[in-house]
Amino acid sequence: MTKKRLYFLLLNLGHFLDHLFMLIFATVAALALHREWGVSYGDLLNFATPGFIAFGIFSLPSGWLGDKWCRDGMMVVFFIGIGLAAIATSYASSAFEVGLGLFIIGIFASIYHPVGIALVSIHWKNTGMRLAANGVWGNMGVASAALLTGYMIDTTGWRMAFFIPGCFSIFCGVVYYSLRYETISASSFSIKNNDLEEEIKGQTSITDLKKQPLFIRILMIIFITTIVTSILFQSTSFALPKIFDERIQAFAKNSLEWVQLNQFSGEANVATMIGVLAFIVFTIASFGQLIVGYFLDTYGPRAVYMFLAALQFVCFALMPGLQDEWAFIIALGFMLGAFGQIPINDFILSKIVSDEYRARIYGIRFVVGFTALAATLPFISTVYEGSGFDTLFRILAGFALITLLAFYFFPRKLPTDMIK
Image 1 (tube, helix red, strand yellow):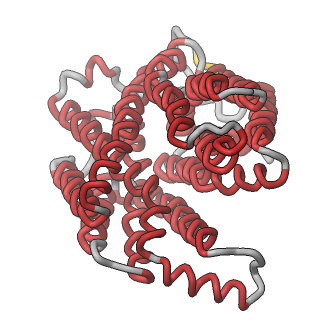
Image 2: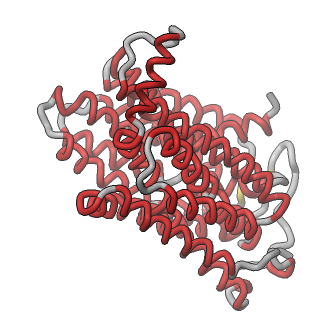
Image 3: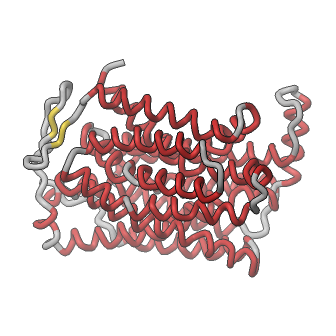
């Protein structure tokens, strides 16, 4: 494997680990700690909240440090820091110590999105495909967290669910440091590396771009859709297992009978099969990002975003009242839309923001997005407790319509004078 490919692989592994570490505790709390320590599941989740707040808020200073100091240096700090924090968390003996460990994990986890995605967006051609591939790795971290953590709980204990990935992350950090693929000078912001020997040229500074009304309109669309799509993504990804538990019980039982008949499984039950079906939906939706990446490079962001928003609107509008097979198919449709939209705003920013300010702009975007993610959970709880998932689907259809209308005002083609 060439250094160039290994470098990109490590950036992708970083995205996988970033989301994996942020979701380990959800499974640990549900399957182990509330029994071992006699603390309720709801109380345990309160100790996880500071970690998610840190995950969002510290994105901005992380992006600033990436721009002012060194992005590759920040990635080394990410790999080794989050690994050490996870290992330390594995030795926790109280809920408070776990909460402190999760908070530190959240601080280091905040580095990846503004810094890692800035690196992914500047090195190669076919930026859309690169961002989409990177997004798949992150989404697979989301999809794999429960499976990997549950397996470790059953085989080696919950502490190893933090310890083993922590050791692997440190190993990745050592390999990443040994590559020394890129050094970003705080004074020149040029890119120097052993393989590409290129500099990012021909981009205006953000101070010039801010004077352009079109640039301001594009930024407004990006940040509006960032808020709305964060709500859509969190609502669907967080609630999907519960949606399947209510909507596809018969389909899950039939699938379970088929699996057992074909001797692919042993002691499975309906709950396990629902989890497997949710994992299948997440995985298919994640790899759908690769198709989105190809179309971004081919047709541009406006057409792709509007198609995905329309897909979500139709699926959310059809979902109320559906059961079993049709509910599974329509859920796959709106998850394809939710996952497919993730790399589009990053793609746009990579085209219109100079490299000098890119990590900081990404940091601002992720602060906005992750704040919306945090606010979504009370929203889901209120709507569900008040009137159930059918009302939630209708509200989400309205949000999807907002994103569709927002991108209607997006230019059909990114103006060349914003890139030169």
